[in-house]
Length: 490
Image 1: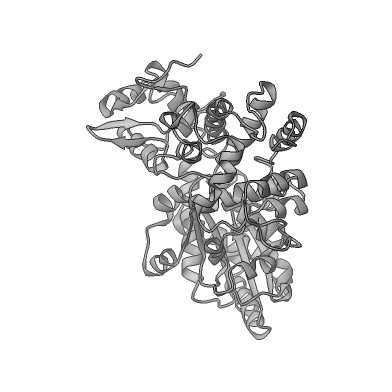
Image 2: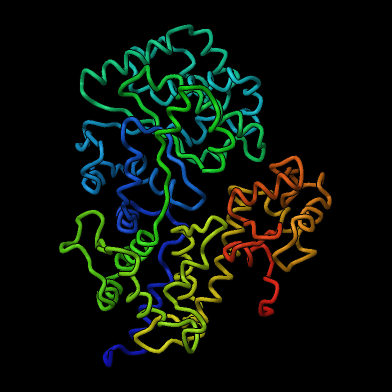
């Protein structure tokens, strides 16, 4: 410790302040894989019999999708789950093709809405665009004229698809037979399904229902042509969790992406340790155990037998207590407890952002004494920024209507509320737009009561005793709220 100087502390803070939060899609492959943390339970998503991969917002659906469908890491990931059914451990035994998003090769929200008049049209649309993304895999594809039409014209594509008769089905049957004879697999992956239809919730619902209905119908027909549908949990419950026997079987064998406290801390430490050799040495100085040899692809991988094994790292980085003594709470417990949503779940995205932002706060106003890197005050201040970022990301990506929720509850910023009080707040200007800008955006519910139930389902709100509705910290500050009886913020 005597050798750990202020200068060394400043260097590590500079490195810690850039952990790559929100950079997954833009990261070069070598950087992505060194930050990616493989979880055995998540890898079951690539069992041939699993088609639905479900997870809450921020649980790493897109990271897992990108690891396999964009960066081709499936064969490298297979050794992390040796007991799972992953028979295609050689790269040449499997081909991975994105089915969505595919950019300009798919309809825009307006075109999609116009093309989804009936449930059958939704199924036909996904059928036709599946054949299109598999064009290069299909022998004698010249017979299928709709393959050469522009992807942004779904009306033309569907019309030509229907005129093709049985040819599209027979083409995929032949492809599946060829795969069986070669003992190979072909996976088609679908991610970012919450972007379907833009801000039109009805169009998004029809599109998701059509996609799941299509694959639930054909899952038994094709043996080696398989789908991987990455779907947000609330969308699965609302739009994909209903249907016949085929869909029930598909849903029963789904993989749900959850993160234990042990995996969350392992992910954080792996990302920090692989950022720089100096940070790796700092982690080792906290008695963190790593794999004996550096993995040639994934870098330094921590071996935490449980979440408690991460305590020395947290206490070396921040300290033992959030204040002068235990009455202010233990730092180790505080970190995840204040990132949990209404379902008591914390996400990798928020945890990485917390440490990254705390390091930036500490650089601007150093308080921690070496070998600590962060002062508890920086962590508390960072939580407010993480909450604001978490809410804003939701508004700009998954839930644009959340802006309207924030605006309507601004009249009473003290949580929790009685349910009746909250309903009255949300009822204000119900028919007005719930989004930013000129485009009209409606709420994803018919009444204020239904909206509260949906927000509870999402984990944005949580129910307490005596018919009260509260807001977890990860959303509290971002929604411009504070807790009754709490300290007034500047």
